[in-house]
Image (cartoon, rainbow, N blue to C red; front, side):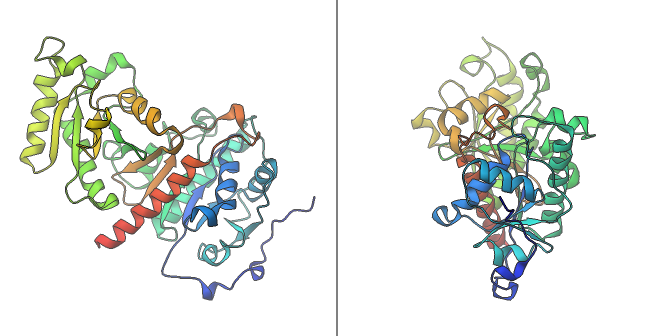
Length: 355
């Protein structure tokens, strides 16, 4: 079958007809062995029905074309040399920036070549957002182990973005957001046995301040309400089941309130995610990874978004991994990527409106 990839931009409307005041979203390819490329193609194929914002993909034109074919999708791929071309091209073809960053489509079979392409795409998409050539960056899933084999020195994409933006890692806050819930884990990828020792008043204050600023700037909330979870069963039950709530979490909440931040708690984690409780706050600040992610993924598994708060640029990502085991089978659900694209565009709009 003849490739539909071309660098001939004359096949679409001229750039002069595009709304140049806008910038496209920059989407990183993710690992070619995972579901990222096919979900990007699927999202573009349904762009009109879903009313998705214009986006370009940072490299990987041949991978995207092959991934689209694996799902039986008719997705013409066009290589562009300037991000602004994406705005005019988006309605007619999937715009991919740069002919240099490409490789093989290897669903279910990760390798070093694919990891190198994923890294190139991440770096390119981030640089576009930092320069203003793209309005935001949306990152497709990567394999952390594969990236480490090609010299990636960060635990994940969030830490890389913090470094690229010159933001301290503690100020790059992971928000998990879906239609039913927004949640932030205070501690993330650490053993549960280490959590209690990592919880400090200063860490709670630092995270909550970032959350408060970000929800105002990126979600347009005038006075964000932050519900802070306890660590222990029944939020410690006045010290009978642990002292962290009385000695650390409670005093930190008091300091936040004194600063004018609408924080409440510590709340027992076994009840704060119930339907009648979720309407009383805008975001839950949980003490550890699963305390935040279990309710989020239970409520909003298909539409969950991972958003990094505290960056000078907008960054979102689907709240799922590479799903190597189902890559290339045409069954992966693009809903989370679609939600990530929409959330990125909405955050960009809120930032623009607040200037």
